[in-house]
Amino acid sequence: MRSSKGTCAVVPSARVMINVTSCCGFNTPSMPVILKLSSPSKPKLATKVPVTIRHAEGTAKTEVDQRKETTPFPFVAVGEYRFKAGDAGFVELRNGDALDGRVVVDGVRWVWLGE
Image (cartoon, rainbow, N blue to C red; front, side, top):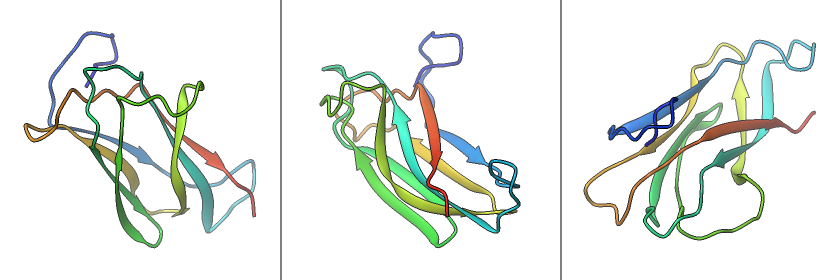
């Protein structure tokens, strides 16, 4: 996975936390979002990147193919989840020897769906 300065660094995982306190000026007990990831689509990237999402209803696991370009946009939707205020929600991408390529994450975006 790439470091914040654009140089390559091999790390076992990258975890991005979300801290929900309010959304758009409204105090809300939970927030429905579409979770999106940004990474380039390159032939040397992994096809089954393990992604773990801790959200209001528990923990979800999925995989992302970073080799295949699924959209011309920089962020690709991973799924819809709810995050509760005060919980330590996160998204985590894992890197490992069993993968068939490198893992890169340029950004994570939580898009609020409203109520």
